[in-house]
Amino acid sequence: MSASPIAPTIPLDGDGARHGFLKLPFSRDDSAWGSVMIPITVIADGDGPTALLTGGNHGDEYEGPVALQELAVSLRPEEVSGRVIILPMMNTPAFAAGRRCSPIDGGNMNRSFPGRPDGTVTQKIAHYIATELVPRADIVLDFHSGGRTLDFLPYAAAHVLEDKAQESACMAAMQAFNAPYSARMLEIDLVGMFDTEVESQGKVFVTTELGGAGTATARSVAIARKGVRNLLRHAGILSGAPELSPSVQIDMPDERCFQFAMHGGLIEYLVDLGDAVAEGQPIARIWPSDRTGVAPVFCTARRDGILAARHVPGLVKIGDFVGLIATVV
Image 1 (spheres, rainbow, N blue to C red):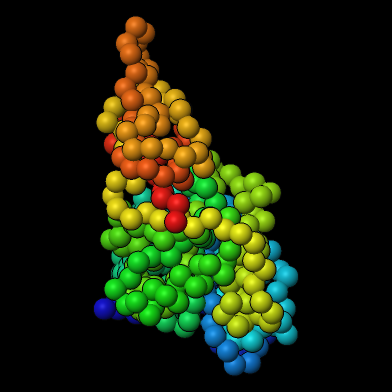
Image 2 (image 1 turned 30 degrees about the vertical axis):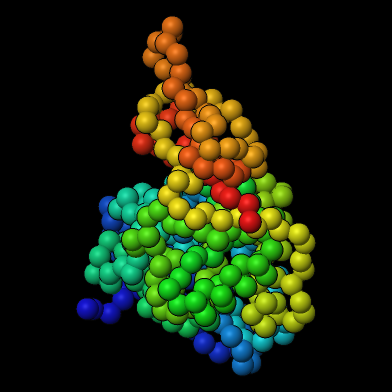
């Protein structure tokens, strides 16, 4: 396989604070010799672990980029034992467009790993991250929220893994992040995920879902800001102990947690995020959006738990995600 066409404009190794770009040549109609410029910061001092901190994997999710932009400005090398690599808007084209997927090639970065050095723009970015940044890291935090189409209870999450020692390390890091909710997470679509790539390289990995609806709030950004510094303390990169508050432990043990729309139309939620529900209880109903005089269709919970995520726009299509029912541990 050919070498990556991406080149950093700053050194990734060595001490100090450096701000620059990952430069990807991209010839296009409006710039024949143009480039995609992906912002990156590296802050390092002495020996110690390396943390890779990423946001903007999906371009319409904002808590991570806000918290990481602030960290890049405020973190000083003398505070660090090791290295922090900050990539606030990893899918820069999608982020600039405020879209989940790249407007250049339609690529969903979180379904594009391990990428290709000779592929699309999204695949090239994914390949560079997978082959140049992840191998340098000991611990990886990838910020997510619901974007324009989902809303979540604010949680940090780690996955169940075959390697139980690695799983334990990931779970401990997730607890140190200390979001209001802490999730043992089941993924419904693992292929091509950044999560899967990082975990396959044996790294400690933590992800989040910190809200959604296409925006960030003061509360959700505060959770991100506190969590990233907690994680760096947990890793030994920053001094001191994580700042801990009570966190509700939730689990997503099987596919019955997930509810999808079997009809399209106008969705009316009957419970709110965080509400307790019982198996068989209606969580939403879908009204026809093109006629009157027709009764709605109910969406019912497939297990006991709490509503941890929901669809955001008022209209749904058949096959859209409706609700995530997580169990409280």
